[in-house]
Length: 238
Image (cartoon, rainbow, N blue to C red; front, side):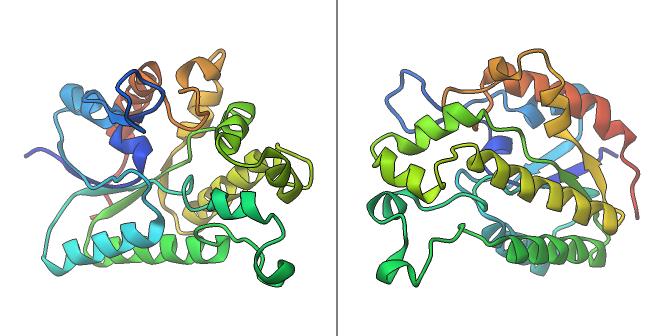
């Protein structure tokens, strides 16, 4: 019997690329990292990843699937890139936030909520005898991502919001990733450290789209090799 894998992720595991000649905001490629790995390893794949997904939506999807009694051997949780991001047009209009800064801008999902929901998803999976697996967040290219955020927005206001430090975008992204990895370790959840694997690649920028956050086709191919190496090592809990 083939192993079955469900995926609760965002555009990274959906296989989104940006900056193509299609004229679309993004395109979904056929050869995403898990589909490529599936061709080699032969597992059954139910990929529920969605472009722009945040962990609250992933949890709702998971809960509905469990209510229907769907069963899998393994479920991959991949989130954080959208959760730690901001709604940039309002930031661009008023970097201090609403009502003269009394209501500050917040990430789409605040860190405490992000970690709480990730923990709940892990417990839900185990209650349904499904082995949870956490994938760490793929790395940003900080300067490219800053350029992307400022495109069509007020760069000076965004810089003000970032306290003059564009690298804060990377720091915030890194914080969510580190906290997610710590949560997984605290709950004895197995991890595929995709971030470390990509950063260890010579010139990891060559694996990324020009928006600085999505892997390109070469990047997804590289990620597939990590899955092919790591997935057979994952131990079933049930």
